[in-house]
Image 1 (cartoon, rainbow, N blue to C red):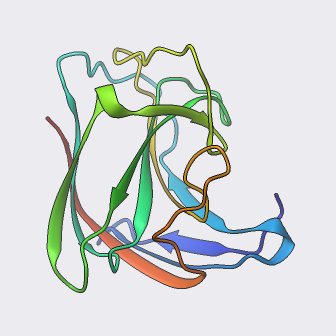
Image 2 (image 1 turned 135 degrees about the vertical axis):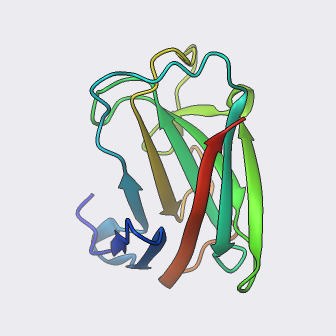
Length: 151
Protein backbone atom coordinates (compact mmCIF):
# COMPACT_ATOMS: atom_id res chain seq x y z
CA UNK A 1 0.00 0.00 0.00
CA UNK A 2 1.53 3.34 0.85
CA UNK A 3 -0.82 5.60 -1.10
CA UNK A 4 -1.27 9.29 -0.44
CA UNK A 5 -5.07 9.43 -0.28
CA UNK A 6 -6.56 11.04 2.81
CA UNK A 7 -9.93 11.52 4.47
CA UNK A 8 -11.54 12.62 7.70
CA UNK A 9 -14.91 12.23 9.33
CA UNK A 10 -16.65 14.78 11.52
CA UNK A 11 -18.09 12.68 14.34
CA UNK A 12 -20.58 15.44 15.18
CA UNK A 13 -22.17 15.76 11.73
CA UNK A 14 -21.24 12.44 10.09
CA UNK A 15 -19.67 14.27 7.13
CA UNK A 16 -16.90 12.15 5.57
CA UNK A 17 -14.66 14.03 3.14
CA UNK A 18 -11.38 13.34 1.45
CA UNK A 19 -9.20 13.14 -1.61
CA UNK A 20 -8.34 9.89 -3.38
CA UNK A 21 -5.08 9.65 -5.35
CA UNK A 22 -3.56 6.81 -7.37
CA UNK A 23 -0.01 7.92 -6.49
CA UNK A 24 2.18 5.27 -4.82
CA UNK A 25 -0.25 2.44 -5.71
CA UNK A 26 -3.12 4.18 -3.90
CA UNK A 27 -6.75 4.50 -4.87
CA UNK A 28 -8.82 4.06 -1.73
CA UNK A 29 -9.73 5.60 1.61
CA UNK A 30 -11.55 4.24 4.59
CA UNK A 31 -12.79 5.07 8.03
CA UNK A 32 -13.54 2.54 10.75
CA UNK A 33 -14.83 2.38 14.28
CA UNK A 34 -12.62 1.41 17.16
CA UNK A 35 -13.13 -2.32 17.91
CA UNK A 36 -15.87 -2.73 20.48
CA UNK A 37 -14.82 -4.00 23.89
CA UNK A 38 -17.97 -6.10 24.09
CA UNK A 39 -19.29 -7.54 20.80
CA UNK A 40 -22.75 -6.60 19.55
CA UNK A 41 -25.17 -9.49 19.22
CA UNK A 42 -26.97 -8.73 15.95
CA UNK A 43 -28.38 -12.23 15.49
CA UNK A 44 -31.95 -10.88 15.68
CA UNK A 45 -31.23 -8.35 12.91
CA UNK A 46 -31.37 -8.81 9.14
CA UNK A 47 -28.92 -6.07 8.21
CA UNK A 48 -27.87 -2.45 8.47
CA UNK A 49 -29.56 0.62 7.07
CA UNK A 50 -27.82 3.93 6.34
CA UNK A 51 -29.51 7.27 5.78
CA UNK A 52 -27.11 9.32 3.66
CA UNK A 53 -26.81 12.72 2.03
CA UNK A 54 -24.71 13.41 -1.04
CA UNK A 55 -22.04 11.15 -2.42
CA UNK A 56 -22.70 12.11 -6.05
CA UNK A 57 -23.93 8.63 -6.97
CA UNK A 58 -20.47 7.13 -6.28
CA UNK A 59 -20.15 3.54 -5.12
CA UNK A 60 -18.94 3.02 -1.57
CA UNK A 61 -18.53 -0.05 0.63
CA UNK A 62 -19.94 -0.67 4.09
CA UNK A 63 -18.10 -3.21 6.19
CA UNK A 64 -19.12 -5.15 9.27
CA UNK A 65 -16.38 -6.84 11.26
CA UNK A 66 -17.03 -9.96 13.34
CA UNK A 67 -13.47 -10.17 14.64
CA UNK A 68 -11.06 -7.80 16.36
CA UNK A 69 -8.29 -8.71 13.88
CA UNK A 70 -7.17 -5.37 12.43
CA UNK A 71 -6.88 -6.71 8.87
CA UNK A 72 -9.05 -9.80 9.19
CA UNK A 73 -12.06 -10.81 7.12
CA UNK A 74 -14.43 -7.91 6.31
CA UNK A 75 -18.11 -8.50 5.61
CA UNK A 76 -18.57 -6.08 2.74
CA UNK A 77 -21.58 -4.60 0.94
CA UNK A 78 -21.25 -2.18 -1.97
CA UNK A 79 -23.81 0.59 -2.33
CA UNK A 80 -24.43 3.60 -4.55
CA UNK A 81 -24.73 6.94 -2.78
CA UNK A 82 -27.51 9.43 -3.47
CA UNK A 83 -26.94 12.01 -6.22
CA UNK A 84 -26.59 15.72 -5.49
CA UNK A 85 -27.74 16.97 -2.10
CA UNK A 86 -30.62 14.49 -1.88
CA UNK A 87 -31.01 12.23 1.14
CA UNK A 88 -31.23 8.53 0.48
CA UNK A 89 -31.49 5.28 2.38
CA UNK A 90 -29.59 2.09 1.64
CA UNK A 91 -30.45 -1.25 3.22
CA UNK A 92 -27.64 -3.78 3.37
CA UNK A 93 -28.81 -7.30 4.28
CA UNK A 94 -26.31 -9.46 6.13
CA UNK A 95 -27.13 -12.40 3.82
CA UNK A 96 -25.76 -10.45 0.82
CA UNK A 97 -22.44 -9.44 2.43
CA UNK A 98 -19.27 -10.55 0.68
CA UNK A 99 -16.41 -11.86 2.85
CA UNK A 100 -13.24 -10.02 1.78
CA UNK A 101 -9.70 -9.14 2.74
CA UNK A 102 -8.35 -6.07 0.90
CA UNK A 103 -11.13 -6.30 -1.77
CA UNK A 104 -10.40 -9.98 -2.48
CA UNK A 105 -13.18 -12.46 -1.76
CA UNK A 106 -12.51 -15.12 0.85
CA UNK A 107 -14.45 -18.37 0.31
CA UNK A 108 -15.81 -20.64 3.01
CA UNK A 109 -16.48 -18.03 5.69
CA UNK A 110 -19.61 -17.60 7.83
CA UNK A 111 -20.69 -14.25 9.29
CA UNK A 112 -20.81 -14.37 13.09
CA UNK A 113 -23.78 -12.07 13.77
CA UNK A 114 -23.45 -12.59 17.54
CA UNK A 115 -19.91 -11.20 17.47
CA UNK A 116 -20.01 -7.82 15.66
CA UNK A 117 -16.87 -5.93 16.66
CA UNK A 118 -16.84 -2.90 14.38
CA UNK A 119 -17.99 -1.01 11.33
CA UNK A 120 -16.18 0.60 8.43
CA UNK A 121 -16.79 2.61 5.27
CA UNK A 122 -14.52 2.55 2.24
CA UNK A 123 -14.29 4.30 -1.09
CA UNK A 124 -12.07 2.37 -3.48
CA UNK A 125 -11.17 2.09 -7.15
CA UNK A 126 -11.64 -1.68 -6.75
CA UNK A 127 -14.92 -3.55 -6.39
CA UNK A 128 -13.93 -7.20 -5.73
CA UNK A 129 -11.16 -9.52 -6.97
CA UNK A 130 -9.42 -6.89 -9.11
CA UNK A 131 -12.54 -5.65 -10.90
CA UNK A 132 -12.74 -1.87 -11.04
CA UNK A 133 -15.48 0.12 -9.33
CA UNK A 134 -17.53 1.58 -12.22
CA UNK A 135 -18.70 4.51 -10.07
CA UNK A 136 -15.31 5.66 -8.77
CA UNK A 137 -13.37 8.81 -9.59
CA UNK A 138 -10.02 10.06 -8.33
CA UNK A 139 -10.06 13.38 -6.51
CA UNK A 140 -12.31 14.89 -3.87
CA UNK A 141 -15.39 13.18 -2.44
CA UNK A 142 -17.87 13.75 0.35
CA UNK A 143 -20.79 11.88 1.82
CA UNK A 144 -22.74 12.51 4.99
CA UNK A 145 -23.90 9.67 7.22
CA UNK A 146 -27.11 10.93 8.81
CA UNK A 147 -28.21 7.75 10.55
CA UNK A 148 -27.11 4.13 10.97
CA UNK A 149 -29.47 1.50 12.31
CA UNK A 150 -30.12 -2.21 12.28
CA UNK A 151 -33.21 -3.71 10.67
